[in-house]
Image 1 (tube, rainbow, N blue to C red):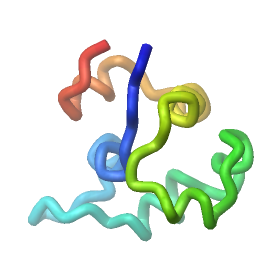
Image 2: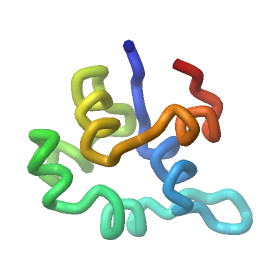
Image 3: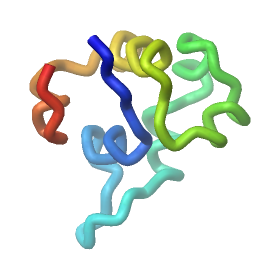
Length: 80
């Protein structure tokens, strides 16, 4: 699976989006991509902040650690 996730997709999957459709990246950082999750996927906060899209290997770790389901991916238009 060559899945490439982005912060924008994670915002939509986890509901960190305003009524106007604007991503709330601060909310994503605080509630979803916590320091514990970043540690498990092998990223520092600084590395995470410098990325918009995650490489395939990091995306796979995110899918595993956040227990992202095919249904969640389908919700944002990704089919696997």
